[in-house]
Image (cartoon, rainbow, N blue to C red; front, side, top):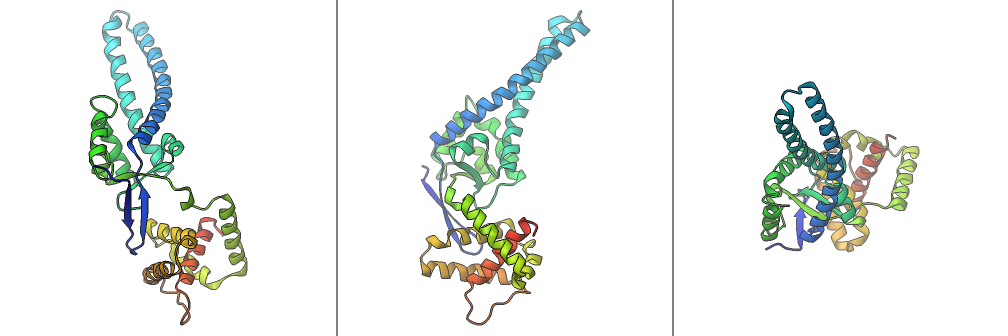
Length: 271
């Protein structure tokens, strides 16, 4: 049976707890996505109808005998291609979200943490063809109900899970503006540590960047003891990839995490 939450531990031994998306909310998101796909399919049907008329006009002797199979083939192919590409494209450009999932406050992530990639997205969505059997995801829904982390066949094969989006995980508009101003101030001041760190930020994996960002954005919610422990662990892993950086004796390891975070912000803003 499925559980309500899953805990993911990063390579730096930082744990993050996610609330799994329930079958009900996932179903509603799927309904919305299906309606959007239906609108796209309607456009395809109009084009197919036009093509069918063209075939009947070009080959009048063949009539409906040739036109109907070709029309049906185009419709089935278009439906399958639209269903698969719709989810893949949105999951890649919106980091694991489709319009339905975004409205429902959900996101697809890797089971071990981190953003979903092309291979995982393609695999989980191609296998929708099996999950959707025999009618409207009955097969996939049964798998999701009986697996601990609510994974359908596509999720199990791709190593992905669907979690509820926590809005406080990322900075809001005011926080983002404040962080951006802080990065501008450091850039103008020419902080040498941040400037040196920018040369190494590109070597970090997306998971490491995500760990640094989440720590900085959530540290105020942590106890002082846990905050210090996490900062020490993250800083230890960063030192291996930032040989040009060093902290003064007795300096808080959190300072190194802040330096890397600001370097990342500046790099993203092309400062």
